[in-house]
Length: 136
Image 1 (cartoon, rainbow, N blue to C red):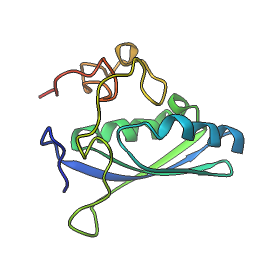
Image 2: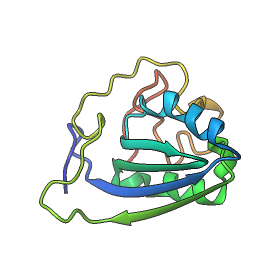
Image 3: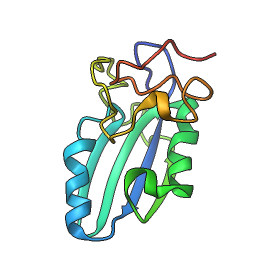
Image 4: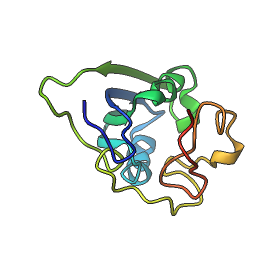
């Protein structure tokens, strides 16, 4: 599996989201293209098709969105985790070590310090100023 500069193993996830309508699905793309974990994100009608490359210890994050799709402003979310078919899977800004902690809010419009997972299961979004040292 691919590794980023923090030496965390990367895992790959296919994501299918359902928005209330096509306009909402399309509006989500403007934010999500800046997500450090997105490798592909494309709305088609009221559906959103995406691929994420995330740290192995963040599997809970995408799984949580299946239970709480409203966190992304969606009606439903399905995710599927996979091993790459080839030696190196798709890369994301995070897995390439390109993410800088400069934003106040996450690209998906969350504020890390207000999240119940922050500093418990999550060190924060690596694109935000709230990002802290990886939890062990």
